[in-house]
Image (tube, rainbow, N blue to C red; front, side, top):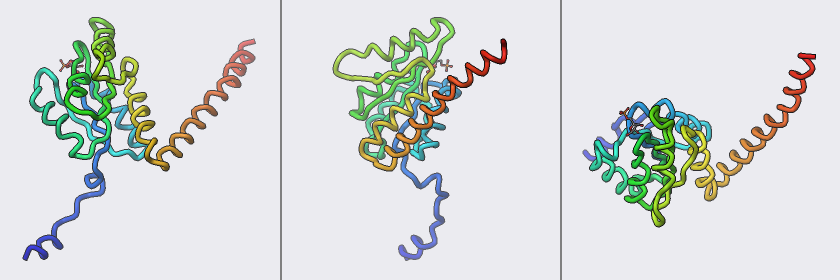
Length: 184
Ligand code: RP5
């Protein structure tokens, strides 16, 4: 009977079967427009991720559950974005030994400097790797660089990505010269 149930169980769609290796956290849905960039970059590199809204002050017990179960659930890295008194990345880092990358979210009152300082100024012992204000893209790329250390295919993709970045940069000389001569 058990075997029959197993055989006829519907298979999940492909997108639900891969275990996320990067957890993307944000303190509120107002952070989503920035934090979705991390998810898109990870998708480009075919690194599976999961997005969650968990607040260090509004739902601290949910955060504890998330962070303390992260390793068992297969996560390798956590990216956490928060604004204002942005304690989400630091508190997450306190509850897991996984690397945590913090994304300071721009805030209108202090132009994101409150978020930046709250995240980057972690006291010694519990590090949070911090990227620039709103730079969720770099957080994803840093996560990919860490994962690539133990994944040759990902490393090859990363090297290819860097080559394209360099090519695009080199083309900028031509572009500015074109603009210069177009004016004169
Ligand atoms: C932080 O407070 C969130 O990370 C967000 O950046 C900020 C504002 O949150 P909401 O008031 O928009 O929910 O916890």
